[in-house]
Length: 307
Image 1 (cartoon, helix red, strand yellow):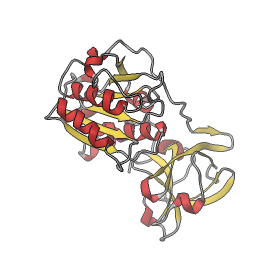
Image 2 (image 1 turned 90 degrees about the vertical axis):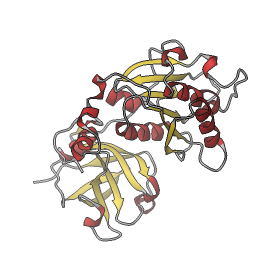
Image 3 (image 1 turned 135 degrees about the vertical axis):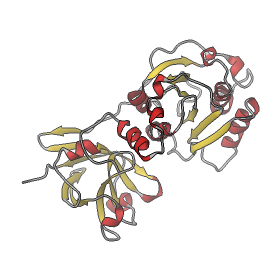
Image 4 (image 1 turned 60 degrees about the vertical axis):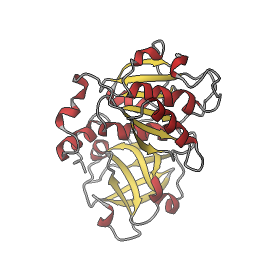
């Protein structure tokens, strides 16, 4: 876990700890200075689930265009229609991949509408083949977007009779494969000068304390993920072992701030900094969402440490 020190830009702490731990070479952190190369790697994420053949069909399209491509899955269990969850998982995954990696992400509640299909290239040399609906907001804030283009080139799509409901197969998968195999990505279509962005709420220090929000739950465990960064929480004055007073939707709670789950008894609630550098709420070997009956999103207010 990163020590809670000064506040840093979102994602910078994660990149630093990867380099320090040896997971990511230091030169990879500075990858924005290196030239971009296609790497025959596609990282794939959808909200399709695995109950039918949708994911397998998309992968078949990719493999047919680039038989040597490696397809890595982030998840296909994104909460249906949740662009925010998709944006969060995407931003959490990209630091582990090299420049030239192609990310194909299909969380697309606006499929078949006037929303654009785009390709974007980040300043780190990674490509993103996505619907233009806010999925790139967190990546753009952390890494920057060098250029984005609308996908209009029908020669890069599957056939002329496109489905109005399965752009994952007909548009995003073939375009991702073209880029992964080294085709000139600028051929997808004209420049898209401005991307759609999510309206992300940020935690703020006020006279009453630190105001934030529960933004998601953590997989099957029910841990509650907040938008409060480690550095922001440190400004309240708490250290490991301290009891912290706060409210969720106005309901008062007191929990210990600890390094890890086992620092408290089984079934006890706790506060901790998660692996992505944000404050989170958990129950040791339990489910915080079920126990606390919390819905997402929910407002939080943390008091400053007294004395």
